[in-house]
Length: 111
Image (cartoon, rainbow, N blue to C red; front, side):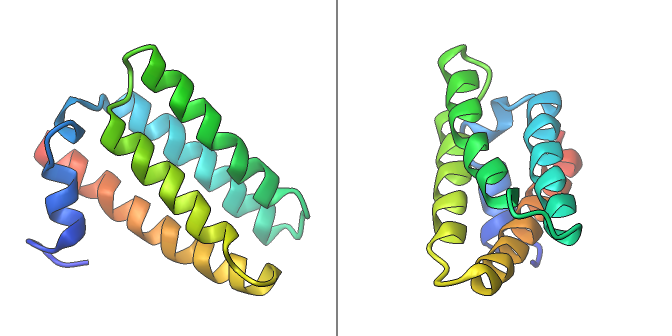
C-alpha cells in the first residue's frame, strides 16, 4: 500500500471522512477477533466474519457508518468467502485484513 494509491484515496473518499474513529475501531476489532479465531484453529472464524456484515449495516441504519464503509465491509467479506476451501479463504482473509489495516492507518493520519 503506497501513498496516493487506491487505499489512500479510499480513506480520503467522501463519506469516509465522516466515519468516527470509534466506529472504524469497533469493526476493525471484530475483524481482528476473527483473525485470532483463525490462528487458534477455531472453525467458526468465517461465521464470525459473516456476522460483521449485518452489524455494520445496522450501524449505517443508525447513521453511524457511511455507505462507502458498509460497501467495503460487505464486499470484503464476500470476497473472502468466495474462496474454494478453508486455505484459500484464510489467504483471502489475510489480504482483506491488510487492506483494512491500511485504511485504519490512513484514516488516523488524515484525522
